Length: 163
Image 1 (cartoon, rainbow, N blue to C red):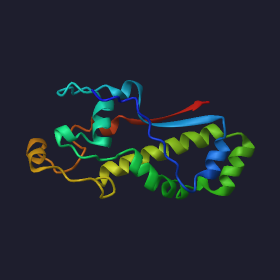
Image 2 (tube, rainbow, N blue to C red):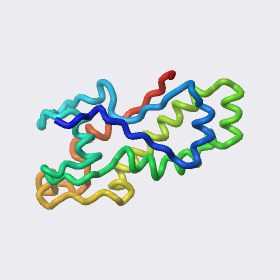
Image 3 (cartoon, rainbow, N blue to C red):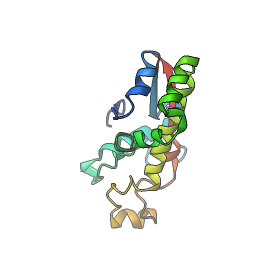
């Protein structure tokens, strides 16, 4: 099986101020972690982390194209989502630093990253994912890529840890 202990690092323009504010204090992780990795409906015998890895990077031997639901959406859209929240304005970030509320800011950033990923599922990767094959459409009775039982989508979470 594929090595699912991979990390996708996202360096998004416009987040420098937030990253500076978080400094060396916190790290935000977003993805399929801990108990969310397991599946209730294990027909394939794969975990959510394994299914996520296959879909994120594709599997040529199984004719599964890459459909990035983590890296691409975060890289392209996280900055815009954060800019749309008052808590991430320059003044609000400066106030959070002054008040020692970096943990709350980091948790909100993680929740916002989850929001971006969920939007990717709703929009077929913001319109960038390759559609399902005819075989897959018949098998799933759906033409929505990456949505079957909903377990993968529900497995996305975030956590904030001290460095």
